[in-house]
Image (cartoon, rainbow, N blue to C red; front, side):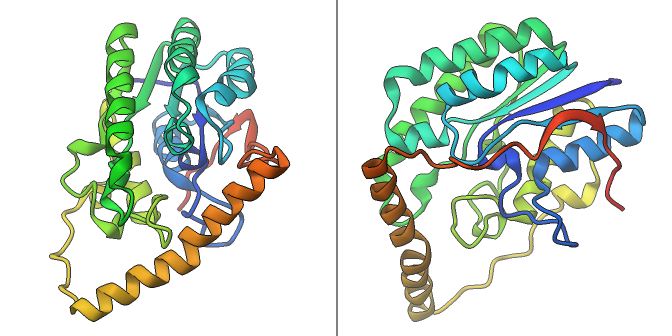
Amino acid sequence: MRIRRYVAIGDSCAEGIDDPYPDGRGYRGWTDLAAGELARVSPSLEYANLAVRGRRLDQILTEQVPLAVAHRPDLVTLFGGGNDVLQGRWQTMARSLDEIVATMAEVADTMVLLTLPDIARLPGLGRLRPRVTRLNDLITETAAKYGTLLVDVRDDEYCHDERLYSADRLHLGPLGHHRVAAHVLTALDQEPDPAWLAPLPPAAREPVWRTAVGHWTWVRQHVYPAVHDTIRNKLSGRQPGDGFVAKRPEPGPFTPAP
């Protein structure tokens, strides 16, 4: 498959949060990794990334989709819905997802949708499992309805392995971004770097006290600040991601990382 123009839309995972470039020039993520491999096959590839952290599906629809349509891409990837789950925005979620996919499927030859991992694996978030399941069912049904490609991250045997995630245990870390990029490339009939899907060594077993300390550190450094920010945003009328912009708003040549 030769792709001339690739546009990524979505939220923080599509933006590449918590997978920084080694030289500190921003976040990389699975979209940059996939674009780099596609550019090796198609050196004239142009790539844009319109994803912005914190964005819900209704915001992706109104803010990113019109720009994506104007770019006339051959390939579109969408990773989104996690913020809808966290905010319980069921009223608009299904309608927004359907409109996003219907609109982009009319423009792009190929579109890839991705499911979400089960965030109920995190302590205290078990109540969110039905929401995540509902979202993933919706994504799967929408992909079938419009004939898009689907990457179901739950098919990866390491999907819930903590080593794939960053310190906040919610966003992917570098290892997770590489694995998602490999799954996307495979869906596009491209051969990913085998190292990106290499089996992980057995996880080291930690004593109970160390696990407990790890949970407390996670709550103190990530959960409490996130709850505080959520309350502050509600009181001020702000939304997560306000003030941030897309990292690659215009399609342009993309040089694969060495």
